Length: 199
Length: 199
Image (tube, rainbow over all chains, first blue to last red; front, side, top):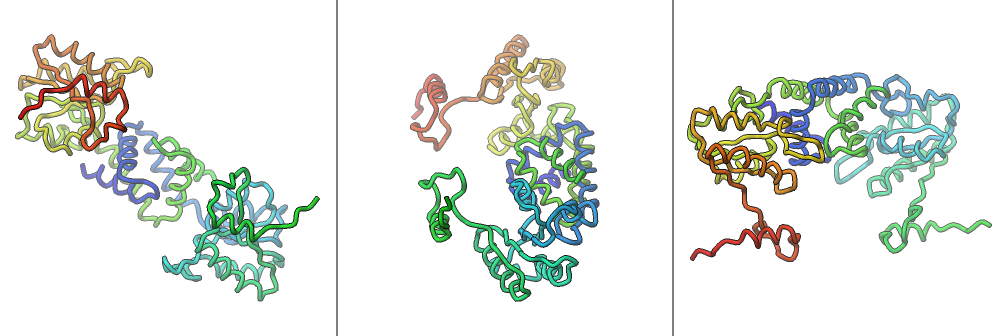
């Protein structure tokens, strides 16, 4: 069946979808009411056309400026730099951050051939040098892996000369974790990053 | 973002898609080229409108009669009854079956309230009593679980009085399996179903 084969190959292109899961999804499409599938197809097209990048932080947004950048109550002197849009949601869930964001849409990677021009670093540097409000601190919250660290170091080398503080989120033992089960790299990071106990 | 929320809830309705995977799929939609998503949306609608049930075996098909039922070289006196369309593909992959199929689209289940009228049993019985070619054997290849067994027993009670042989696929130790790791129910089935060694 030609249309089914095309559907399977569409599903296979999606992240985390293997051949078995693609088959299950295709069977769902065949079984589901016509209205559900029409709804899905329309929502796909609508999402694709309605959502663009916020002109300030590069996060996905339906408006030219995203709700966080438009929120007057947020601290505009503090920018948290993350790799992906999902990371913004993760930091927001912690409910402790009141600054604004910048979404890079990736991380530098020599292995995958991702250079500074391939992610939204230029937009960040422009915000810092030509923004209306002077930024006092950039918190680099890229992932704690090789690419994330490379990106953090590169950003620091570009931003520090502007006289803006650049900080990195703390790496260490997760809360509720069991030392027994923590990998040695995290533990050594956690030891190196030890801080005096305040009482 | 309203359209993104709608897209997430569309993905959440799909089988095997949890909240995290729905998020990943939504991010894929935002990142992917417009043409890929348009292709997906169009293929969804096309599949939904092009694919119906084969008028003979009830398998999904783009034509009124599916390729297997239309294949003149297949043995029409042998019908293999399966629960789902995927099961047809699984039996076909074994390359040993040359008969035709009947897809029930489910199994009887007192727990889930699925009765004989909810699945394609009526269509099977009609094929058997009014078919052009007299069927000599019905192989019941429903799943080897409680619902599949119930369905097999019900089918036998309906079909045997027609003078047609009803057989059940063999249950036992899978090839390449390790007896140590086989559950006790399978093993007891396998012992009960033992056959004389031919040499």
